[in-house]
Structure formats: C-alpha cells, structure tokens
Amino acid sequence: MASESYNNLMVVSFYSRQLVGCEVVSVSAMTSNVDLILPPPDNLSFVFHLENGCSGVFVMVVSSRSPKILWRVVGTNGTLQIERGFQGQHGYLVSLYDANGQCKSSFFPFSGVTEELKAFFNDVSENTLKKGSQFVPEHRLSFVEGARDVALLEAMLESGSRQGKQVQVKKF
Image 1: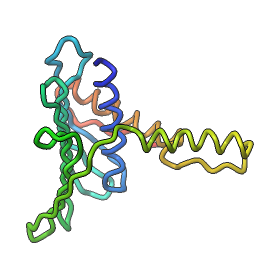
Image 2: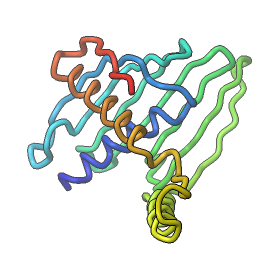
Image 3: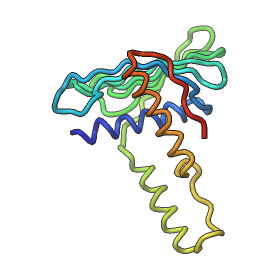
Image 4: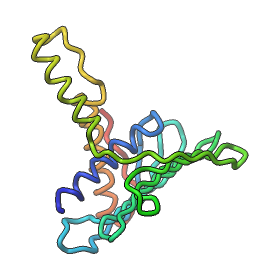
C-alpha cells in the first residue's frame, strides 16, 4: 500500500507533464496525510502553470475507499479534464470542452503500466541486440524525462510542505 502512494505520485508527475505537450513551470500544492498507514502525503491538490501560459489543477485522494485522481487544464481553445476512478470504474474518463462549452467524453479502461513496461523491455532488448550507439531509445524513457518527472514531484512536495507556497520546477 505504501508503494502505491509513491507510484501514484510518479504517475501524476509524468502525466501532468505529458498531457498538454509542454512543461510545468511552477506549482502551488496542498498535501495531507489522512491514513497514517500510508507514508505522507496520501492526499495532494495542486495548481500548476505551464510554459505555454495555460494553467490547471490536479487532485489525488489515495486514502479513500474510492481513490480519485483528477486533472483539469484550461486553455484558450477549451478545457481538458481527465478523471481516474469514474463512477467506480477502473479507468479514465477524458472530457474535452470546446470554446463554446460543448463536451465530448470518452472512457478508457485502465490497464496499469502495461504499455510502459512493454516499451521498457523493448528498449532493453533492442539495446542488447544493437550494442550501443545504433540504438535509439523511446524518448519518454530517457534519463532527462525521468529527471523532469522527479523535479515536478519535488516541487509538488516542497510546495505542500510550505503550505502551498508557489515553487518553480527545476529545468533540465
């Protein structure tokens, strides 16, 4: 259970960065630890600002019978909302609201990290077969992308420990 909280935070970091195709530049977070069996934080809410000028909100509640993760990003052409744990279903409800307020929604079942593991194992196999310099790894699995995920996670946790003070995300 403790590792689930940490894994969820890493997923938050990765998807918050990947959702809109640009980097998060700053965050303001509130964190709490409700279930003392879990390491802190088990609840996280933050506002994030993107390098393209857009902003969004994120909420993650782990210490609940029905865990919830929600992203909402507001842009000039509409709003994107992604909700994990929709009406007791294991998956993501993705809703796109256009500039006129019209909404299109789709549900995608959650399959864990299957695709990420496939990409990782493929990269390991390819690197072993091609012996080094000829190999081009999946960009999302690079050290730089991992460092960017950790930088966002650190900024969230720092802001939460500072009662929501805005924190700049380190650039890599």
